[in-house]
Image (cartoon, rainbow, N blue to C red; front, side, top):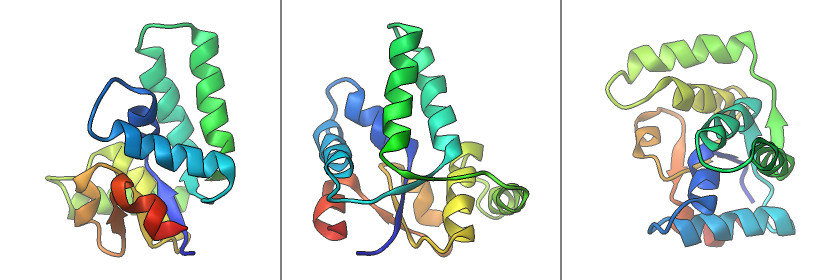
Length: 143
């Protein structure tokens, strides 16, 4: 199995409203929780997820518990100054498609030799050195 990084969008869709990506993202999360997949993520994924969840109706305690459980399902990588430098380079190189949080996730993957990112976000298609894996294909491709 190849190494892959998870984008926050997978978790957001998995717990979100009805959407075409909801069930595929739930399948990815279930495979992570069940041990069939071993994903990686930046610690910034947890921060981004908390940010999103705190903006939704519900309790703060529930939002934090959800973010912790999703963070526990991944091998988390610290965000370093090298990641920041590469994220800024990526933002300069791919200015039309990539936002700052995506650049952080991409830099985390690239600096650790992780070739794939599981995400619904097509902005990752523009990042040299990364291959985006659609959540609809992730479980079959990565197990």
